[in-house]
Amino acid sequence: MTKHLYQYFFRGLITALPLGLTVYLLYVFLRWTETLAMQLIRPFIGEFYVPGMGLLLGICGIFLLGFLVSQRGAGRLLSLVELPFTNLPVVKSIYSSLKDFADYFSPRRSQANQQMVVALRIPGQDLELVGLLTRQRVDDLPGGFLQGDRVAVYLPMGYMIGGYTVFVPRGWVQPIDMPVEEAMRASLFAWMSAGGSGASPGQARP
Image (cartoon, rainbow, N blue to C red):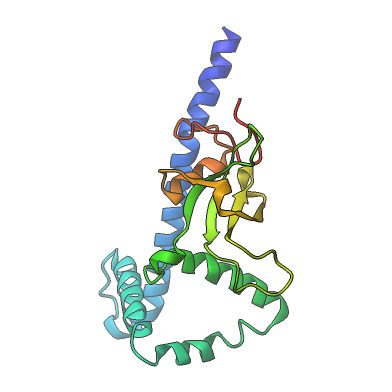
């Protein structure tokens, strides 16, 4: 009986935790946007305020920002705005990492630079490493790298505690018919979820 209660509790916890965290983060975001909206537009509209105007204002602001940065010459202005964030020692590392992460989802990325999920197979070894193909060529890298038909593969570690980037011959990688987002999500929990049937990066399949 105790064993069944233990299993029921953790099954309920596993089910409720993702839902609860998602709802909580949405609540925090909505509350923040509502508070910010009230501070910005209260001087103009007085007491007339409808709940949800903060979210609407945030969405409109994102669309407006996207429109502005899409215009010709906006890149130079954006570079000036980014100048303090790209020169301060600690802030530079944080901002650059977040910018690179955001640029990964940018629709302006060319097809040649799109990442894809691959299985890295070392010849003569019954081993598969699941990773992301991040670079299709190495001839534009600094001197010291091995040249030839080689590619870069990023191997994320379980629970996103880090990862490794390896440069290997193109023949060592095999594309996997799987969205990048799904592969990253599976790697986050070491491929233990029902959606991921492979081994975690860095481990052989049983």
